[in-house]
Image (cartoon, rainbow, N blue to C red; front, side):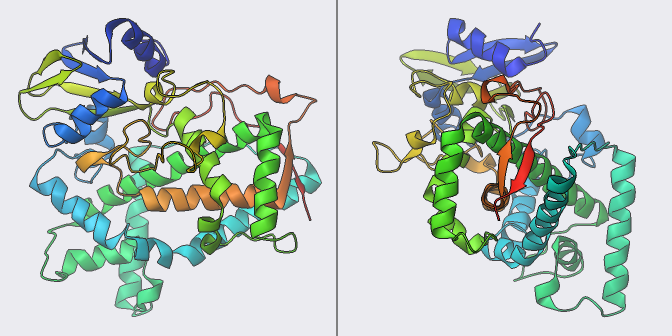
Length: 401
């Protein structure tokens, strides 16, 4: 009944029944939240009550019994895992330490596209994910790191990667903190890191490029900024340049408004609670599934004038309100969630998306194949973890220099 795009169906229902509405998903009671005022009630005022995640079969099967961070229930174990990831994997200093690796990978992508500009061949990517295949790959990676440690070939701190850090935390306490993790925890956390960074980042980059192809003037404005900040003789975008690229920031914000990396964010209440909105009281029972409809939030015409239009300038900080990525005070724009369960990998995700998007736009001019006009580009999405494009994006790059 909810169809193939439930975030759109639930938006239509919320227009009729209000920003806080209840329904049943089979035997599971659920509450759907669709306005910034309602989200503030659930993600700030009553954050502790709605900080848990529901147990679902997929998380038990693919995420090692929910022993990672993303799907574990709210409580001491989740707090321990979040602290581990925030301090040792996703801190600003740790993300910055991996800049050479990201630069190398972006360089590989650019070289691939340079070859494609000569061959004029489209690129198609298909990844088949199964828990057995992932486990086999992760075991091999962990074994290689363990062998490297034994052989003393990976002892330099600056060369440590996520696996080295997690193996170290498994065997030793850090600053008096013993995280009590084992091999399964390591694989579960690595799956969280992979699932939470690769697919969502790739999907966001594709949506950004799609919107830029549909709006040539926005593409030109962004390229002009890159030419000014980076220079026309320097085609490599460095992460240290990102803070100077204000229009790039607006483009990424507008992309995430229209195409959030997670359309429906699940929560679960850990106790009975009453919430009040616009004079109306709502009683939420313990263990109720809560769905935060970020897709509906980004297209709410009461919040966003011309909500369906791609307009990065709406995020110009000079205007009435600065909507940042964190959603601490403003719940009109929370692409990374908010409250206790907000995404701890926000800095890593934004760094990746901004760097790759800027590099692709600065290095190449892009055009649609087969004589398609920008208005012909199919912008439909399909439902999934990161709300990806329904159809592959085909575009032809030409080196700007």
